Structures are given as C-alpha cells and as structure tokens.
Amino acid sequence: MDLPEVVSAEEWDAAQKAHRAKEKELTRRSDELAAERRRLPRTKVEKDYEFEGPQGKVALPDLFEGRRQLILHHFMFGPNQGCCMFIDQVGHPAHLHARDVTFAITSRAPFEKLEPFRRRLGWEHPWYSWGGGDFGVDFGTSPPEPKEGAYQDGEGFALSVFLHDGGDVYRTYFTKSRGVEAIGPVWSFLDRAPFGRQETWEESPAGYPQDEPYSWWHRHDEYEEER
Image: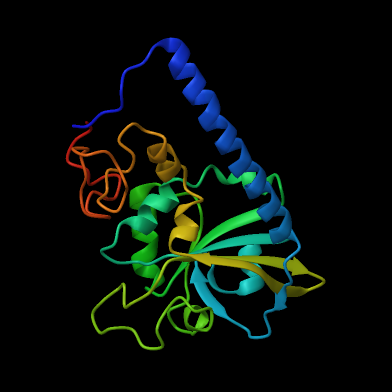
C-alpha cells in the first residue's frame, strides 16, 4: 500500500495548515452558493397532489405539518441502499422544526409497504406514498409507468424544497444524485478518513482498499459485523 510519507510534527502541521486554507476557500465558495440559492426564483405548484401517509389521504400542503418550509426526499424504494443510508443521516426532526422546516420522505411504493420498513429502521420522519398519482413523474424522479413487480421501478433519488406562503406552495430548490449525497455526513466523514470512501472511482494512492461503487452499502441492520 502506497501510504503517504511520514514527516515530523512540524512538517505535518505546515501541510495541514496549507490544506485547511484550501478548505476555507471552498467553504467561502459554498457560502456564496448558499446565498445565491436563497435568491433563486421559485415556481408555484399549480397541481393538486394526493399522498397516503400516517393520517390517511393528504395533500401536499399537509406535508408541511403547519410549518412554512418543507424538505422532501424522493426515496428510491427498492434494492438500492443509498436512500436508506441518506435517511439514516438525517438528524432529529426537532432541530429542523426549530427553524420552521419539516423533513418528509415520498415514494411510489404503497404506504402499507413503506410504514413497516420505516418502523424497522427506526426513522422518525414521516413517509408518504404518491403511488396512486403522478407526483414523482411530474417532478422528474420517476418514469410514467412502473416496472411490473418492482418497487424501484426506475425511480430516482432526489431532494425537492418547498415554501408554503399565502396559502400557495412554491418549489424553491431541487437536486439529485450526488447533489443529494453531498448533504450526508457519512460521505463527508469518509472523504476525510485516511482511505476515503474506498471506491474504485476515487483517485487514491496505489494499494488502497477499494470496492466497486455502492457495493459496500447496506441498510444499517444488514451489515454482517462491525469492523
């Protein structure tokens, strides 16, 4: 394994300071993007959508639970583990509620399949099914027709953000794929670990442990053992 060189504490500290300066610049750029994001135009949701959740049939405004802001995760319910890993990383809802934000999950799969799965994994955030309508199709995360017998049905994972203002709902932000991944701390932690994410797409020194992307991802109650 081609590990980095061993240096004195003084040389290590100098290298760390130089790298932190680059990280600080990235943080400043991230702050600029966040400020720009807050000024992005919004679009009104004109269509009425119906979901099924813990309280039965509800509309999109009900998902806000009386708050003004809604962050909605488009969950790819199927064999892929990435959405499970992301939801595991979402913190206690009280912290978001304190800032007038509700976090919720939506999937095409029927609610009777979603709710037992949510309970199994101990998630506190509400999970809604839009399977009887076209919410995911209209919002660009699912194909018009599901694949027969498959929960995943080609559904993609993404994040939509909404504002409830003056009785109307507006869509303010959308991201998908690695844009969603960037929000999760597990990947951010691994990016700072000595061996990184240990996936083949990463540029790492020779001999570092690496697996195919996603191959090591599991639901948190399905890992064989803790390392």
